Length: 225
Image (tube, rainbow, N blue to C red; front, side):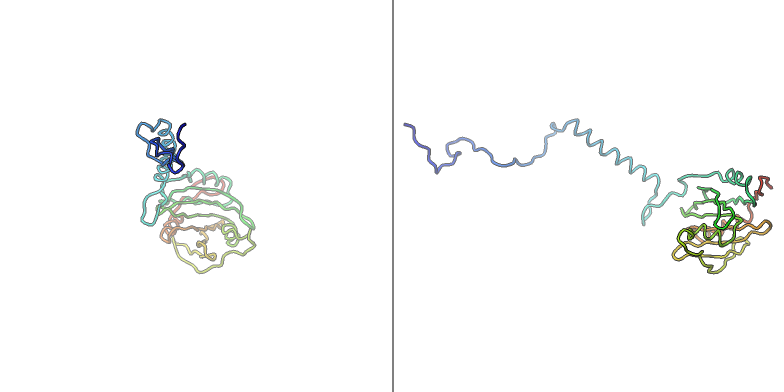
């Protein structure tokens, strides 16, 4: 008769290895266990990240306070050709100022209360912007249109004073918390008003104002002088 097992002894007391209970501890895989599939997966993650960093680096430059937009990057508009096109159907002459800014937009549209506005958008070397508007509309009409207050049921910005720049007297309007609108009437007939607004400095505004007075004129109807 075989002896009965002693219940006080553990299964490992008779020399047999004990079976492990519970999850095995994690271990670092050996070099040979890294598969080609693992490496391809890592590359698929790293490549898009690298492309993103490359594109951001091309459009921004380092500054202690954060990235700065590259003033030379972005769209560029042929203002000479665009204004020559607009002048052919314009009821008033257009001026083509020569400024050291990049023109990135040009368009033409109606003005609240009657008249037409011809707009040129500029990006300055400081990566700020200026918008030049030439129009045969009234001061109130162009202010309402360019400030966008008509859609909000508000009146135009109020005049806060005048400033002399480029041989012209500019009326300065500033909406609450917004950028200034400077409006001047050009000499000669028919009556033409110009409006300048944007985030650029007073110095950049004066550069544009001076260039506007010296600018080449494209009379309405397409003839040039």
